[in-house]
Amino acid sequence: MNEPHANEDLLEARQSYFEKYDFPLFSHIDFRVSDAQVVRPFYDALMGLFGTEPTTVRTARYGYTRRYGSVRADFFNVYEDPQARPTATRIALAAPSRAFVDEVARVVREHGAREVDGPALLEQAHPTFYAVYFEDPLGNRFEVCHHRMDK
Image (cartoon, rainbow, N blue to C red):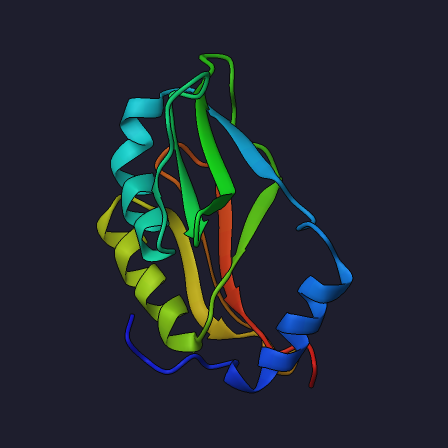
């Protein structure tokens, strides 16, 4: 998306985060689904919005990563496990703006998302919390949210 970054004024905070921490909190997510091919178009569309590229397939069925210069990070790997079932666990992905959340909502609806709720401002969670909640075509729970925690 070519809109100005909604959190541009937080640049100093983001820089100080990476000065303080030598590495990110999460390395990767290994996500198990009962049918990897059924949900692949959904994940291709969703992860594409976040600027990912396909990972090198090793043990995962397929996966996504983002590149920071020559460094790859933010891995989301999809594994097929016929015994996998959706749970109450929800993965929340950060969005750079409310407009991005709106775009995610549109794209996941077009690609078979179930139980789409929002997008909406959820001030009971935080005064700036804007999110969409949804399930992938197999019922796994996700959220994409934008909020300013400095407020």
